[in-house]
Length: 307
Image (cartoon, rainbow, N blue to C red):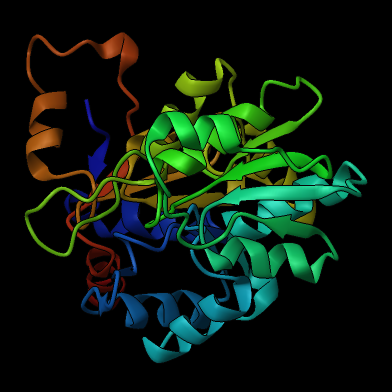
């Protein structure tokens, strides 16, 4: 039901799998690292892919950093990466508006990662940082005067998310001509412990409910990112592998594009999820099933070294 466990492949099957891949697209959080901790032997696995002549690209829904900041994060974890090898949703939000020839101001509910990418494209912005409410909520709603220059609302992960931001974004979005951009739909981030770690999708769902509008998503698994990476990297779907820890974003992206898919259980998806997919009463019509799965990325390295 869940595809083949990578470690169950015979040497011949595994060689065929590796030889059939020219390009690897990989999620980051939950596959290569968890926040500030590297996932053991993932850097060595990525390096081995490159030694074997595979092109490797980092495709993340994270919107809190810029591409250049991801390059530095990779370097700190012993991964080798250039800006051209990284696609993050803070960057994609800026690309989306640039493609629209946007010349107004973006109201951002998110982080400085988004605003730095906007600035790199010469796009003005406002709204970043804490927005503390003075007085009560009725006064706040009454006193808010929308900025007439605002032509877009971008929602990403915002640790300062607040009622004033909700009011302002929803008010701007009353105008159907205002662009409504969501960076990614992930409602959960890979947690560094057993606590729940709500993700960007939670903020976007709240904003959609408040504005009675639906955001255009620029991250995995949506069409904007698919079109961007397909054109940028000139991908041959039959010889491309998508690796991720989230079935609803990473694996679904791969399925929509016709890529091979590898699910790792070091992030969002767990062994219990796999067991549930294999249950006799599982709803197979709605399951997103990877071609292969592994406990973590280093399982692939172990298979390469033992072949």
